[in-house]
Each structure stands twice: as structure tokens, then as C-alpha cells.
Length: 223
Image 1 (cartoon, rainbow, N blue to C red):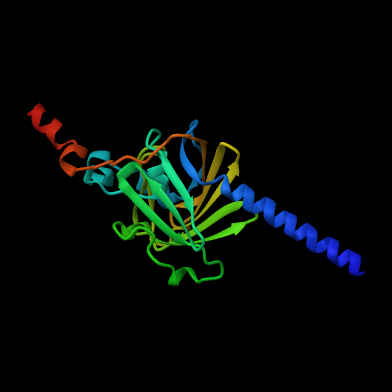
Image 2 (image 1 turned 90 degrees about the horizontal axis):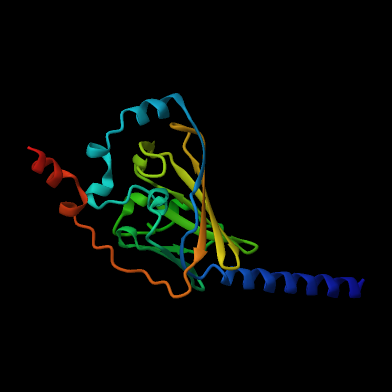
């Protein structure tokens, strides 16, 4: 019995070390390596809300406001950066200069989680945890409004939105699977992003200004 106990402990130690090593693969700068896939079923309210969408009027990016992390990651060329710390995860998105800080605090109620992007509190409150070598992040507190304007234009969200992100390492590749739970507008919404590592990548300033981001200057030229 003692031998079996020791062997079980060794297996746990080795498995834990393997998971820790694989988690380390998530650190780095990443860029989309293909088109994201979307599995989506809208509710009746979701279909009506999407039909009302007017990109010239409703796209928050034209005011340099990121609609959601889903919208941010749908922009193909700007990279993202993942840096795992002892007690939190730093995720930096070049698009809109987003600097996200998520505590690694499994078991903490999401209602007590901090806003992960103080400059954009509408993006919600997040808590991270590990499931083996997978980094999982749960988020609540997103403001009602636009969810996506690029990958699936015109998608909206309610203030009941809750998201689950899973960062899955695979050497120099990574998948990020985002599952959206919003009973008002979706029966199902799952978006999967394929990433590849940029060995010498860096996050550059985006420096968005509403004057350059919106279409007002083009409409004025047409008059």
C-alpha cells in the first residue's frame, strides 16, 4: 500500500510538472494564423437586434472604443501578448492599446473580481484559473451594447452576457475558444481563434483617435 501511495504521488508530481511546462508555452506574442470559426444560433431578439445594426452609427470602434474581446481578436493583423505571472495573467492587445490584467484566483466569486481593463470598464470583470495546461478565464459585467462588428457584423450583447475563454497551448500554436452565454440574444455562440507565435513579435502603439477612426471626414468630402 505504501508503494502504491508513493507511485500515485510521483504520477501527480510528474503530471503537474508537465502541465506547468505546457502552460509556459502560452507566454509570447501571437497573431491569427487563419480565419476564426463561429458557431452561432441567434434568438428571435438577436435576429431583430442584428437587423437594426448600422455600422456608421453603431460601431464603437469609430470612437476608439473596443466593443468586446471577441471584436478585438477578430481584427486579424494586430497581435496579442500573453504573459503569465504568479498571481495574475497579463494579456495585451495591440488593437486599441488594451492592457488586460486578470487575477489567477479560482473560487473567487466573479462579482468580486476586478475590472480587467480599467480604461475600458465596460469589458467586464474577470477571474482566471488553470485546467491542466489550459488557461481558462471567466468574465461577467460586460455592458449591454455591441459584441462584434467585424467577424460577424452587427452582433449585440445584453448585460447578462457571460463569457468563458480557454487558451489552449500547442507548441508554437495556440487556440483561444470563447463561449458566450447570453440568454437574451443567443442560443449558442462559440468563436474559435487559431494563433501562431511571433518569435520576435512585439506590441506596438495603436494610438487610435476618433477623428481618424470614424467616417465623418469621408462623408464631408462627398457633400
